[in-house]
Image: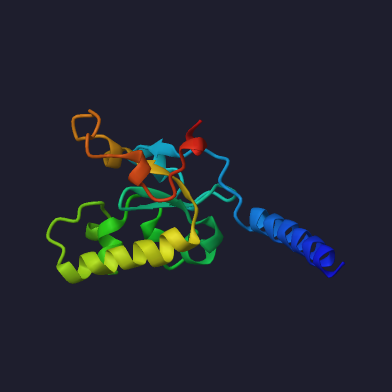
Amino acid sequence: MATARICVLYVVLSTTLAEDFKLKHKPSTKPVRLFTEEELTRYDGSEEGQPIYMAVKGVVFDVTKGKEFYGKDAPYNALVGKDSTRAVAKMSLDPADLTSDTTGLTEEQLESLDSIFEGTYKAKYPIVGYTASRILTKDGSYNEDFKPEDQPHFQIKDEF
């Protein structure tokens, strides 16, 4: 009799925990997009009700829930609507640093970039796409080094 009670308790707990897990870890249902520089500028926080996007390392994040930091007239609004990789690495809001170009960054700045990318952006904000420059070369051809399965948060079922 005690064994039967333990089995029933196990089944009930397993079902409850499985349901709890499903609710907390719901996969994204929206496919990721490819953004051109021009397209990304539309999501700069200037229009009320429009999402706010920014890219770091070619990955486009929806930072709308951080509107107090990234929205219109907010302290980090200069970073949105573009790929701000260099500015994030340098912790800079200088207009010259608001670019995806990482040429000339120090090892320390590159480590800082990786840390902020992983610990802040990937941890807090949903990925909505990639910049065209991450996937395409300057002449518009496909970047052979780009592998979707190696990208953060990529799930092949989200693409279909």
